[in-house]
Image (cartoon, rainbow, N blue to C red; front, side):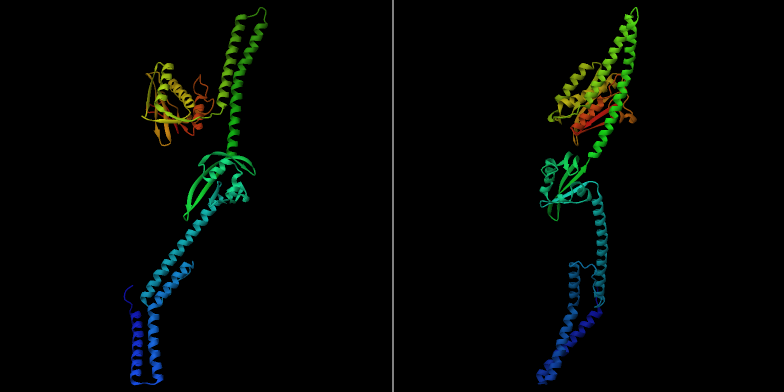
Length: 435
């Protein structure tokens, strides 16, 4: 802050007064001066000492008062500028820092209010568990569980054991579970995470109801299924009815046209069998897939698939590779069914202009084993990659349209996913991940 002449001059003045007072007091005592002289000299010495102490310690007292105001949360506190150039500079620096701090606190308070409003209006329910007590942290939580659920964590046992296990940390969550709530039972995705606030453990639980979305998806799927089923059955029944009528006419003629009637009945039988196979396929597709997972070695599993493929597709070359030591966590029967479907599709799609080639790759990925089945055929156009996963959609004259759909269902049952891409040879590449 530099040298302050005013401070020094005032300090010297008090020192001079103190010195004069002490000198006068000493002279009065030595010369035997009267009481009045002693009193005046003593007062001068005391005044000089008091003034000097007050002048020297004034900045410390101002600082102490300023800091104490800050400690008590008084953001309006300011330090006086009096006392000289150095003290004014100190006061200006402290006051500028205080104004910056005040503006930062105002911004932080506004940001906190925004985040609190955002959290409160978030459509996903948030519960905070701290020291055995549950707080419903936003409107969605209060609307879902009701205000009476707040307080002791034991009050939230009613929604069911899976939810209570996630609430207490015994279960991680992340998958849909049923919740028994005042408004009825519904499914929700519940996730829990352990955090810390001010050194104390806090468990945050997010509850995202999905029952309405599931109901809408189910209704849409049922509508689509009924539309597809009625369309396909009517397509099959129309020629059956026509053939049955033709056969009845031929059998009623005199003489009976046996050859034509036999041909009509045989055609009728083939169409009826085709309809039966379609209905069986529909029933197979509608059956829910349940995976019984276990961990097994990938190489012997892939070797068996290769043997089965070679027996059925003698004219095809299968190039299969497995990452050494790879293991798979899946239901081996379901996964084999899915991969045989993919290998069969790849064999049918492979290019006949050169030797038909199919590839099978198994390797480790970020979320588990990755399995790829490719071919050297024309590939699947980008515009059709969503459609080919729909039930009964097919681009093949003899296809049922359920193969890829079932493969995708098997992948979903394992918590994995199916992706369609283009392989190195330009053909289709089907990738299964999450095993």
